[in-house]
Amino acid sequence: MTRREILMLSLAERPHLPAGVLESEGWGLQMVTNGADAKALIGKGNLHVGLIHFADFHEGAMETIEDVILSRNSMEWVALIPAAGLQTPEAGRFVADNFHDFHTLPVDPMRLMVTLGHAYGKAALKSRLDAPSRNTGGYRMVGASAIMEELYQNMRKMQGSDSPILITGESGTGKELAAQAVHFHSARRQWPFVAVNCGALPTPLIQSELFGHEKGAFTGAFQRKIGRIEAAARGTVFLDEIGELPLELQVNLLRFLQEKTVERIGSNRVIPVDVRVIAATNVDIEHAVRDGRFREDLYYRLNVLRLRMPPLRERERDIELLAHIYLREFARKEKLAVRGFSKKALRAMLNHPWPGNVRELINRVKRAAVMSESRLITATDLGLDNPDTAESDLSLDSARERAEREVIKACLQRTMNNVSEAARQLDISRVTLYRLMNKFGINA
Image (cartoon, rainbow, N blue to C red; front, side, top):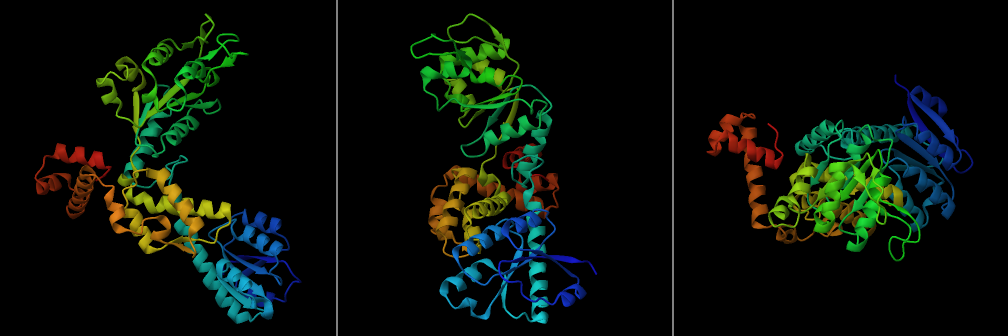
């Protein structure tokens, strides 16, 4: 029989436990008397069930117990308390919110065996469900959908190159996260990653921020300043919202990309800088080039390699995955009792168009976790309780794209992923079908 370990945290005089019965049933007991030791054992990762024995519901004890329980979401806990311990509403609420079950002392050995078995099975199931949810493709990004797998594959190809990368995508899709991932998996990972938001800097300060200045170069320049590009030497500089860079400063950036040198304001000295450039934009950069708002020569210098960050509405498989991960992290950090989402909440999230993408999802989940009055977050907590609201932000183009994606997915499933047959049934060419599959992130 495989030995199953139980953690027991005792914050009161140790109760009499049927050690012989526990051992004969394959349970091993690891005893601790304080929260720090309990968390240290939990950190080793081989525990699924814990017993907590306490006699008083004073503030210090409850804080210690909450801290231990929240240190691992997948564990299940059983309370051992005196018979008179549940007399107050506060005590009852605390036990109901934090424990799988409770036993009043003295312990009934057979009932405890049944409870431990149920708790262990539930915890093991939660661990198995949590494991694949950490599908990051080897990066610090979360997503298991086909379109994210394609993104990971493209990032792996790019991490061995030093060529500039242009990352495109809507606001809130994680462009900076992708840039960081490429950097920290490249040969430059031991050197700096410096991020610059070109849209957040006042125009008069952008040149100084990017290229630096010498003391006395202008009024207020009381000392030499190293620019962001120079500060990223041997590493990576990330230029976010590159489409917002004024035309007059695009010339300076182009010169740097061509010559790999910078000149601080107020100096004639040319400084060679070895740095990889990754730029990002949430605007249609090709349209900006056609309109004359972005230099064509700079565009071609930046657009050597390209990553497209998909909007959340194209990653339906990842919505629930992301929601659960951020809820767990936030609940653990803020010591909240909420543990999951109702079925209606999950359905509402799938129907919502997510104009703010992952950033919007994170904000809604955080707000809901704080406002929820139960263990399960509802659609109302998320602000998605009105079914009309979820659809009201959809444009005609978005609705059409969603319908096309669902029809193509259904047809491919019906034809066992036979692209030629699916194209025939849809009355379109194979080339058109492949283009649409690529657009919607559908893999056959």
